[in-house]
Length: 71
Image (cartoon, rainbow, N blue to C red; front, side, top):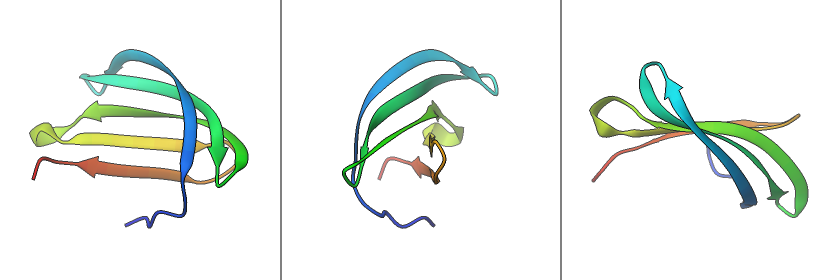
C-alpha cells in the first residue's frame, strides 16, 4: 500500500480510448506537488467487478496506483 505524501494540484488533458478491451481515460497533467512544479501522465478505467482502477506517473519521480470500489 502506498501512503499519501502530500497534495497534488493540477490541470488535466484527457483523451478517451480503451485499455485491455475496457473503456479508459488517458491523461497528462501539469501542476504542483507540495508547491513544486510537476507534470506527468496516467490513466483510469473501470476494472473487474466495477472497480475504478487508476495509475498516475510523475515525470522523473514517483508513480502511484489505487483501486476504488463501492462500499
